[in-house]
Length: 356
Image (tube, rainbow, N blue to C red; front, side, top):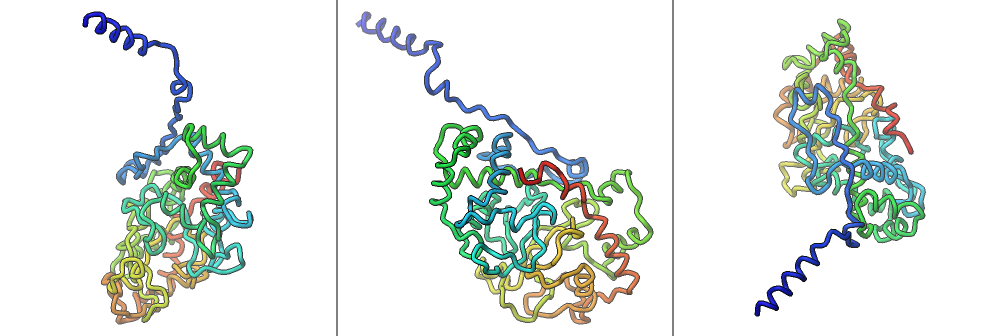
């Protein structure tokens, strides 16, 4: 019995040898690349949402950027994520509806992409049907209007590529390429798209001065009896400039697009769409979920004189019975000046966000 005990202990000791095993030599040790949190964001809002199973890494972000700009994801290799999310347009496009690979237009305006790591409710798209940034990245590939492909085809292409297998290995270790890993990488890149250097940002940091028109425009924005914009789009203490909540903002009396109601199945949600950020309006026209307004002036006129009642209209549209808030021409002009001060030219020209 003692001999067997000694033998067992010896075997255990030998198995604990310092010699590296195949598993050791293949160990995956990613290089973390935490988001660079802007000073205003750090001071004013809670930290961003980063999934525990998809931390930001140097190679994950690099892979995600390459995938984002690569038309390999589309059926005919003609369209990339960046086709509808152009850096020069704050990662949207300048079309009312984006055109897919078969020349067919969608039915929604392409949403801009920035500061998405602070989307705390983790609901994406105009109607909130994607429950994470990773989930959001899955859909365009298989959407029959957009890329009109299958993930099986995409994964096969990536596996057969001369460069992607090594890029995936660096990003995620020695594991098979999957759609889940591809979308994790894209989500990592998208979380780096941070916009926080507008004139108004610099004003809040004491580095810029607003014009009298911009100052009055801010007052109009914050005044419940004038613009009354802050309920849905925040205030200087919310650098996101959106509440990330779904509202019916008085566009139509009836709805050809149910918005959130199509997803939730609740008639009370019909006509509700996510409040977009007011950052980068200088680059993101046309506006609204259906791109109906070509200019910022048209948007302001809608809230001033164009509100339309429907049963699900948001209670925040308090002056719908009067058709809107009825701004003076000067207040309209000043409000526009303030809104444009929220645009960030350094974001659209950031070399880290351009095609690799």
